[in-house]
Image (cartoon, rainbow, N blue to C red; front, side, top):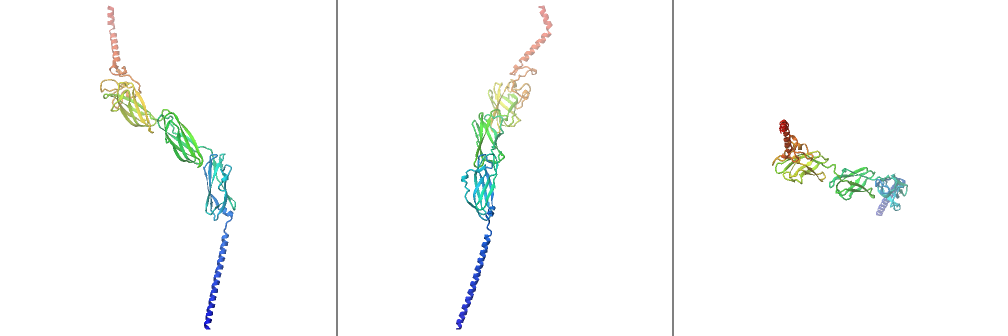
Amino acid sequence: MKISKSVLGILVLFLMVAAASAATASASTTSSASSSSGSSTASASTTLSSEQALSQVYVSSATVDPQEFYPYEQGTITVQVTNSGSQSVAFENADILNNNIYIEDEEHNPYQGMTYLGPGNTMTYTFQVVAKPPEGTYFPLFTLASRDAGSLRYPIMVKIDSKPIETSFSLIPDNFALNSTDNVNLTINNPRDGTITDVVVTPMGSGFGITPDKVFLESVPAHSSVTVPFAITPYQKTTANFSIQYSNGAMNPHSDYISLPLTLGASKTAANPVINNLALTTPGAYYQLTGDVTNTGITDAIGMTLSTGAPVQPVDPYAQYAVGSLTTNDFSSFTLTFTGNDLAAVPITIAWKDANGNSLSTHQAFDLRSLAYTSGTGSTRTGSSGTGSTGSPSGAAAAGYSGASRGGGGIFGIGGGRTGGLSAFYPVIAGGIVVIAAIVLYLKRKWILAKFKKQ
């Protein structure tokens, strides 16, 4: 009986513990439910209104291509819209509103449907538009309607101007020399407010050579210019035409043309060699001619050489004389050796190159008879006074020689023939005999008269 009471007591104690545990679990569940309900209420209280959500959406960038339209040109307007808020916003009907800057195909506007812009995201809208004249500055309105509130509006500046690019030439010679290369600069000036791109300059025409045959320029910025050099060699009188192709924006190709007449004539900037101070000697079985050559032109003469030609025959040691480079207003002495019987017209050829590598030459003929007289092998041939030597002009030659013939030497510097030598004294001797005879006759006139009277 005692054992039964003990077992009964244990059962009662167990039931009491179980009841206490159940009460604790129930209180915990109630507390958790109450906390969850409070959190849900707080979350519901932070939801933004449609107007507040829309106020956190803004236009983050807007670009126009081209930067400045020609009338009736096509282009693009690109707008980026950013949601800086914490909840999505529904949009529809994105559009560009303006009578002069308008969407080319409004019926196929791809942004008429509904779109959602999530928090922290950016959406890009690109519209193909047309610029309608008149010229001026316009502010087309970008609009984006919200489904649950008002709409987003943003003005965009767009310019329309028909001002063309400008082209001109510089560094043009007064005349182009036949088969001679001259440098010419083509300047492309962009007076517009927008950059032009993909510029291609192509020379066109015939009767001339040109380098380079095509030039590509990536761009010419607004209010700036680019100079393109060309080297032109005319083969005849003709005209060089230049085509200038370029783009205004990505969708608008343009072209322009300019012409350059290639007028032929003597170059006013070329080197101009002049020969003077000639002296002629005969150091052996040949003639030796010395003198000076002066560059009176505007540009330098490079690799200058001098030589003689028919009717005389060049011989060594100076069949050809190399001067080298002769700068403007500078001179150099030279020596030429040749044989021949006719000194009435001895041609001297001067050849050189200019800075562009063009081969140029000039020919000058000289009458050398006044510089020579005959007195045997090894004699000196000079002008009317002084004695010349190789490389050292003297006498009349030292004073310069214009190419005109002069008389040979004689007594007291007068008389003489054109060919020089002993024959140059015949008129002087004859004149002296006549003078002496006249003096004798004058002194003996009485005696001679008396003889006549006796007869």
